[in-house]
Image (tube, rainbow, N blue to C red; front, side, top):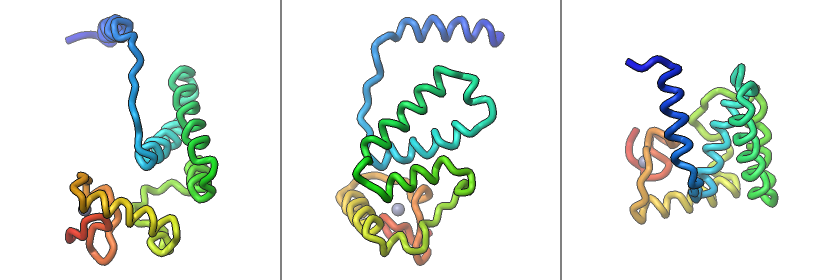
Length: 139
Ligand SMILES: [Zn+2]
């Protein structure tokens, strides 16, 4: 069994050996999901003490906000993501979301993607009328 120090030393060697940047492309919705998780993580006690990790997270969030600079509703959701009053892990959309313009457009596009074969985890999506909002599977 490795000690924490031994494990850290080995990990440091491995990370140094992997110096090529990690490149990835995120769909906008995936970037928002990740932004939400980072916003929660940034409020965790002690997060700011890890300056490198904090800087990466804040920079990622700045990029997501810049990407959505022309999307005021999305920016408002991101703003609320920084406000602990909106924490709660609610899996239900706001009551007016499916009927809102952004909700209707988003749901229609995602449902079309699922209908065309895109995968999703029903448990990660809202249900309406006891059915997954993306595939209508009974929940
Ligand atoms: Zn589903």
